[in-house]
Image (spheres, rainbow, N blue to C red):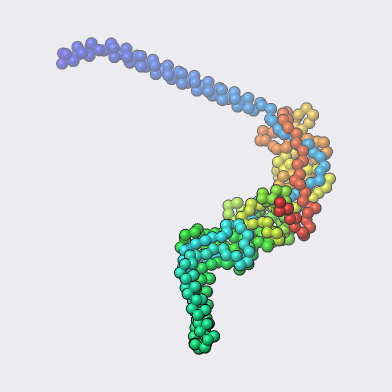
Length: 376
């Protein structure tokens, strides 16, 4: 017990010194953290004030009267017309495929064939026997029933051999190919599909907002990457009655005459649907207008780069531009797209001036005759 007291007495001062040092370090850490937090808050507040005081950067739109064309631009995929599914009517192994997906196929052409070894030998044997029977019948050595029997056997062998081939019943394009050489198939397997391409279709998804602009028979001009600069003309053939998916779109189908069979199923297509043309019209970008409670305003950019909120009366609206009936005139400049921090009387920095960029008007091509590109 005496030894323990002496041990404690011996180490008492070093332990107390270590404790004092630890407390000092903790106090210093608390002061540093408090100072750092205060500095960070001050810096953040200063940055926020600086951002609030920064001059907004905008693009200005120069108002002019233009030939305002509203044209709906949609994308879709080329589809064929009537579809025919190809199946073999016997079991077998694929020996040959003569076409690839998208290839044009003529009526009577062999699309696919099975291994024909056994069927071909049976056909050769049956035709050889028929030839012999015909000679015997002509010499009077056998009666006609024997000839009829040989003819029937040869006909059956020919039909069995022909079952090894799939031939196109009409002109078209190969829309699908579901097998490869060497695959074993049964009559239940769809080997390929043939689609009619005298008339093709473009299927496009149209949002609800634009559906009111479309109607059956409306002219559609289509471009495909395969033929740059060429325009194919058609009409809207159907508008799906139901809205589909989360995108809230309805499928619009446009029919395109394809007499030269240049358009093939699967091609990516860009469709232009002419909606309206308004000559000598003042327009501003749709993004330049602020609407609230049925009232519309724009921010005019004055000579000293200060902006002024101006009430306007609007007319026809497209997805990109809006017709202005009153409020601004030719030569006026408005903020082309509205950032959140704009307010009346604020000074802005104009970094770009924009003008109306109308799409190429295709209204002149609404005639019935399709434009066929050169095959070169």
